[in-house]
Length: 109
Image 1 (cartoon, rainbow, N blue to C red):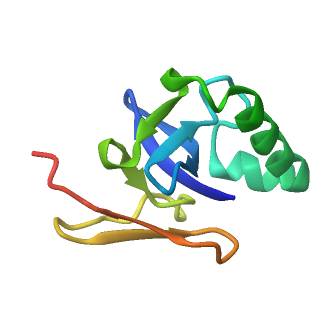
Image 2 (tube, rainbow, N blue to C red; image 1 turned 135 degrees about the horizontal axis):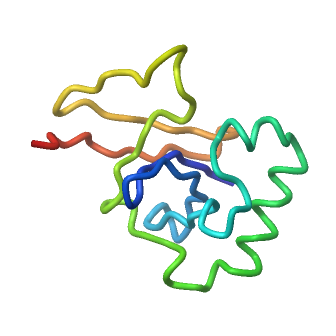
């Protein structure tokens, strides 16, 4: 299972990466898991909850977005603040050595 932290509608979200890395299922949309920190705190029960929610609601188009349309964030917040990313930097997220999701950071001006 691949997971990513991203921004949607101005809020930080936790997503499950699916459809050959093309889509992000919003795990926070149904208030299941609202952050990567909540997921890690929940341990195996959190992963089970994410998997079960995706199995039940993964087909709902409105709960997923294209990875290219998402602003990917660092998976976990650093101490005090998010790391600063420059235009052209890459963010790489890897969960359980299954694969890597890359997203070029674009200038937000």
